[in-house]
Image (cartoon, rainbow, N blue to C red; front, side, top):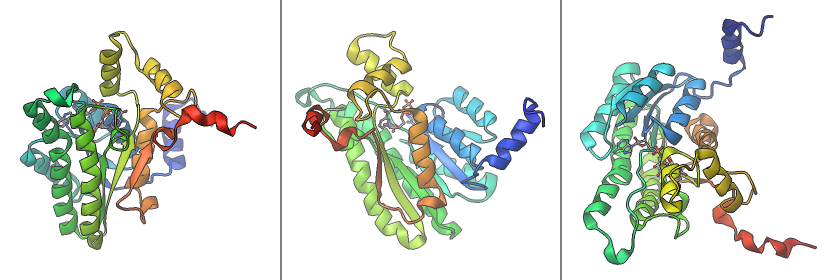
Length: 285
Ligand SMILES: NC(=O)c1ccc[n+]([C@@H]2O[C@H](COP(=O)([O-])OP(=O)(O)OC[C@H]3O[C@@H](n4cnc5c(N)ncnc54)[C@H](O)[C@@H]3O)[C@@H](O)[C@H]2O)c1
């Protein structure tokens, strides 16, 4: 067999690929880049039909074309646009099985004594209301479809530990955990699972630009951010998080393999939020 032949390779990939989401239909908000884009690729490799809902039209369209998916412009802070994104999936493939409420922004830092309420409301409109819109419209469609479904929401390590992000961002991510638990409670009777992921320190465009700001170094690259996280923000010394680590966790929650998991927060942080690593010398003999 000629392994350099691209057709042969494609066939091999198809045969060997576990296709854990074969035929499933997914909407990914914020799917044009970063964690959302990595997840869109992994979903497509696993046989899903993916609708990318974002505000970055050019990159979103090009990614959708490359994975045989669809792109729809959707600002998640606007309920009607999230409703439309879900409708694109239903009009395209007749169903919705997976909703990944991933769109988010880092927001605005600074002291609580100077917090600007208009900036806070802007952040909440995207990070929190966006997730409410996503769960609401996905749930309506999934309930009507009577096939159940799985909804995954992006929280953050910042929901578990203080001091990792701005007050507004932290608040939005903590609220998402509560919302996911309460909606998991309501939607379980329809066979709809609702879970969260909480990534930490994954070098997306968002994180890299935050590090550039904090460290005053606009030249900082994703691999350098990953190294800093690996050394200081992970129990697995030297091993920082990758976009694909998060995509694989979302794949698990999207697939039937997590069929008995709901109301859960899957933390993807190299153990960072579980331990005070500075004291690990106490384990020395
Ligand atoms: N990168 C990390 O380490 C990390 C850690 C914890 C949580 N998260 C969360 O993961 C999610 C994805 O972030 P990322 O790190 O990939 O960042 P990113 O900036 O690379 O990607 C965010 C995506 O959301 C889109 N988006 C922003 N505002 C939108 C809006 N109003 N409507 C629709 N789309 C919008 C952006 O265009 C972009 O495609 C976010 O919710 C973020 O808070 C990331």
